[in-house]
Image (tube, rainbow, N blue to C red; front, side, top):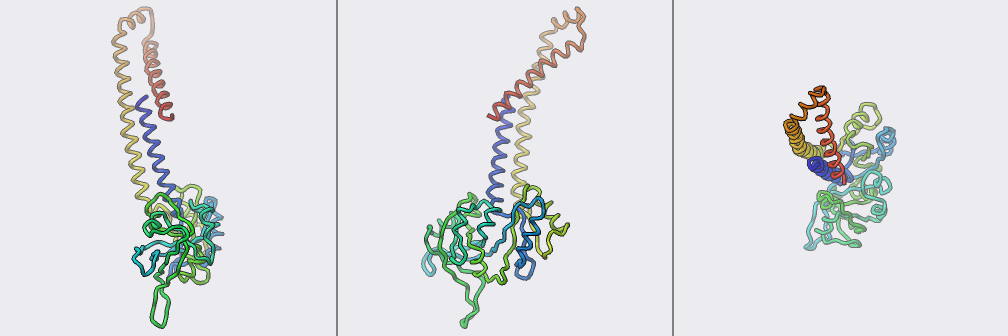
Length: 312
């Protein structure tokens, strides 16, 4: 009972840990990502890509995005720290369908108003609060008589998100996709790519292959899935969970051996009773069944108590 209880409790903790990590990482990262393969890695006909990809039965939602790196500071020219960040331009009504960012957060991103949502740790490091103005410096330069100068734009902090993963909370900022297209000079309404959310995340490689092989997409594009960027991390957690199962199963195995030894002792203790039963005409199989039932009842009672304790 104690062995089974320990097995269920530890595996449940490991499953919860794995699920929480998956929720946090894949709530922001893409299940499947479709990006352009021109010289600038831009996707022009993204509306058509979304329509075509959603014809696959496993694809639940799709959303375009513009993503690039930039420098950000809360006080340009002052003493405040300058941070390198990933800027993701999103369409609020579609982004909420493929990520854990909900509408109540994304509704503050309005095209043309140049609003920005910062990760919690990023806002802390910049000492920026809601309502503050921050400066974004894009690497894409603008040609001027003085030469090529970086593009600089002031944004207003309208909200702060906290995913619980330092990777995102410290280096990700969200803006409206139209503002991102203007800032990073995306022409003809092009985007960096399209993010897909699928029904079963473990089918991502299979769904990606089917999108390619069955000609769901007419556009020339690169496809990648979450296993390409986070596979080692989740594989390490899975291996750890498997090893914990094996180790804790040994506790149950030890209990089973103890049960066998107890039955052997019971047979030895009951030799005289067995002899009397045999003299009265009892068959070997009948006596054997008595001890099998005794061991089975003990085992099943222990298993039931262990399951009850573990689940509780």
